[in-house]
Length: 465
Ligand code: SF4
Image (cartoon, rainbow, N blue to C red):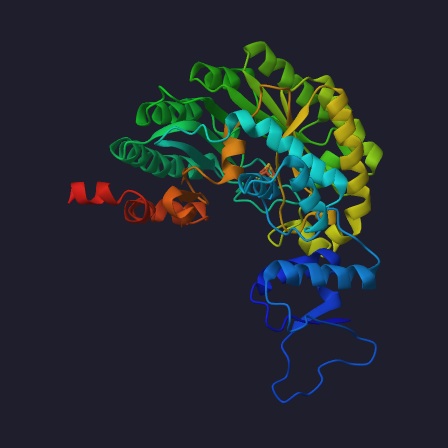
């Protein structure tokens, strides 16, 4: 058992995150010194104590990292970085006047990143450059959530419900109310959407007529003149039909996501998906025939029962379908998922396998002409690795880049949406959440709107009084 004392270092949460990246929760305790000086260790414990001379978060993380590396014999490709958005760190270091070579050196020496991860960050930052700092005043992102799916995937920790059609309709009514309010408030605020993203859940679970009504509500509520990207997640291939895709296209959607996650039938059955791997190819053919500007495909590395060759088979099969974007996720097993209940330490055992999948996958994608353009990390990821969005050059998703940069307001509508209001003068984001339970959302829709009036559109409130 590891007994760890942080002593005077304040950012205990981030230090705890770093420890969790090395050790499963059952193997360590984070303790405070007993005020009476009684020892809390037992024989055989490994004790790590941050010296009193260490007072900053980064020094604390480096010390901990060195100690954990010494005792476990492991090192982490992302070094001491525990945050979600490591590309931002590169931006900050460049903005501080460092040359690219100095940034690389700093990532390796100060944050202990592997050379490969440091270079990956630098190349992503370079791909993003034409998009950075191009936000016009008043440009925002709009996210709309549809929290329904045909079945629940074994690893799902999102707001996803399997319900009858009768239960979907009151949700859409409440959502329409929130969209109409938001459209009016955004315009009054002098804002406009630069990108609109309908996600979930699986938005394409909606029937054609309901999808049409939703899209028309969105288009008539917001000023679409300056919208540069309109995405709908058509995540589950079993929800995709030609007529539904035609509805998307006719209503101006120019980017869709078809998310097979794996092309191995046994895996699809194991994770709780209803579709066949052939349905994915069919969905792609239909979408390509209808003609969207960008089609994205999501894959997950580290799914239960998969070996590196299974993942690489899926990746090559997807590349053959020629999507414009391919997002490679590392499986993250979170508390709300069934997989976590079944196998609490799943993520800790998958590290090496997933590392092989991602490294080989990156090379295959680059050889096929894809470049990495955005990256984020999550808690509980197998091997503490990363999610990377790849694209053909020029097919980057603006919404994905902006949300990772965190320097634009994102207005999130629907159950589970968390709006993030950007205050540039203070370099600060403020979060205004909606409730995540869709039934409570319906019941409390007036309150969700009021939260936005109070937290975002304060001028709107005054004008209406
Ligand atoms: S498709 Fe996505 S949101 Fe729906 S159940 Fe699966 S993981 Fe959850």
